[in-house]
Length: 74
Image: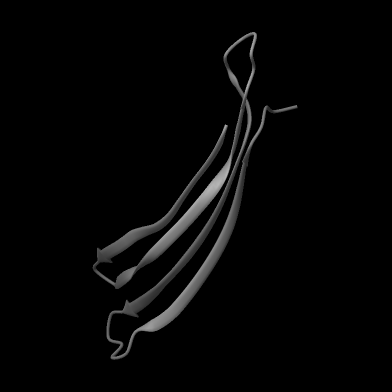
């Protein structure tokens, strides 16, 4: 199963930081036809936004890319 989602709004606010931006993510999910269990999965995500730390006047542009893999333990 391939999946993808683009231009997802992202907003985080806590006591020391605010972040406003967007997230793109995509990947694959491999499902066993016999057991119907997930055998393997991937996730790639690209986040772009403006982050402001407490006490900081101007926001900083951040860009984060991450990979995730779900697989059985050996």
